[in-house]
Image 1 (tube, rainbow, N blue to C red):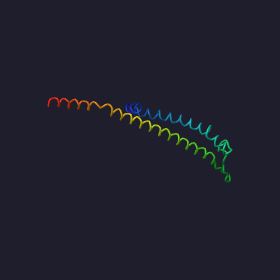
Image 2: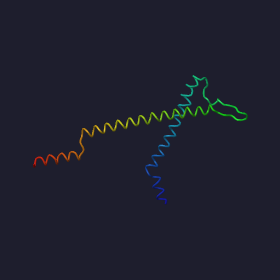
Image 3: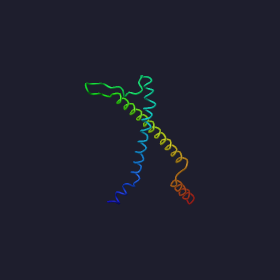
Length: 127
């Protein structure tokens, strides 16, 4: 059982997932800073408030903090847009690599094609 657990922990997939998670958390702090330090002040310059946390709706003794919710929605939209741009750039890079690979295949025949051509040429000279 310990061997299986060790194998599970040392598998490449688990390590890749852990690295991805750490990078995602680091990416989140960058996006949070982008939203809090860049985007929200720009919106505040237009709207007149430094952030939306002060926007509340008092109902009796309760308080609905819809300004904080707006900040979260803005962050979500920005994160989604940035991830969209990253995926779009990655897909474009993969497509360019695929096209380059196809051009290489067209320009240079594979070993099996070369071997078949040699066999064909040999059979022609014998016949």
